[in-house]
Amino acid sequence: MPEQRLHIGKLPADLLASFLGRIALDDTVVLGPGIGRDAAVVRVGERLVALKSDPITFATDAIGWYAVNVNANDIACLGAIPRWFLATVLLPETATVELAQRVLDDLAHAASSLGIALVGGHTEITASLDRPIVSGTMVGVFEREHVLRPELARPGDAILLVRGIAIEGTALLARECARTLERALGPELLARCQAFLTDPGISVLGPAKLLYEQLGPALRYLHDPTEGGLATGLHELATACGTGIRVRQQAILVYPETEAVCRVLALDPLGLIASGALLAVVAPSVVEEALRVLAESGIPATQLGWLDPDPDCRILLTETGAQPLPTFVVDEVARLFADGGCT
Image (cartoon, rainbow, N blue to C red; front, side):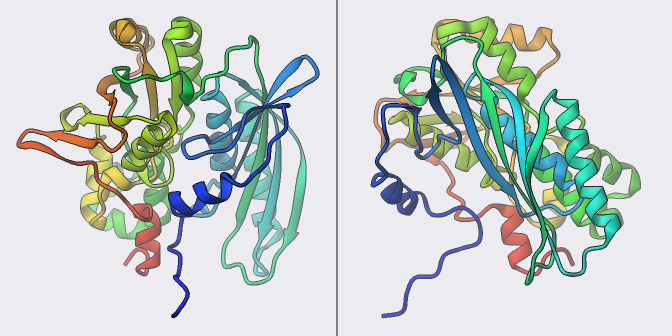
């Protein structure tokens, strides 16, 4: 019987969960690995330290900016402050001095913009690569001992969608598929999509810090939907919390720019890599306060849904009724590239 092939993108959740369940952890580990747990927390002496590692494999343009921001986001989702970053930069055999300098400068600029120190890593020219890959490790610290974790969530808690979708996917596709999209969208709309990388931007440090400081224990858990988009992020959130989930389709904010890009490339926004958005699980009693605090800072947010006591419940509520929350085996960007990329 032939061996089962894996798809491009994340490992299947059941395969990863099976592996993680066999890992032995010692008592210094405060928060270990798991589905929907994108960073770890360990105790070092009297201090809690947050740790995160993530590669950038889809993007080529501004790859250093992506690498720093997506790693910093997962540190912030714990309630920690990202402080130090180590980058492994792998360049193809065709790389020029100019390309290497551009990637390194991009890393330094991104780190500096977030108050993060770029403290080391590794660089090399690697055989068999057709594009640069940057993998990073971020280290963060806590100002107080309140770690946001899925175990704090409970059925009935509200789920907020902070900002819309899909910021990273829109920026990435506008930059990687520029010629195709410019023909369909025109230069002005394309430029706006490309600018999504910094406006509204893929960083969630601001809203994560704001909710952490303002809501206290009523903020249970934060999760940023990345590869696989909002739909995959919601599945991960439910798995991590050990609950079901009910989501209102009308509460999903999809940027017009995202809709335009997805229409041209025949992609589904719900499965498009969505860094820049933030999923927040909060106590029902603070929903109005959370939305008010965010609105006062100019950050759009909606009450997306709530946690259901039935772990098997993964429901999308539409105008015509309830249906299963969509599942994406691979991110829509990965699917596009696997199918031949931009035409």
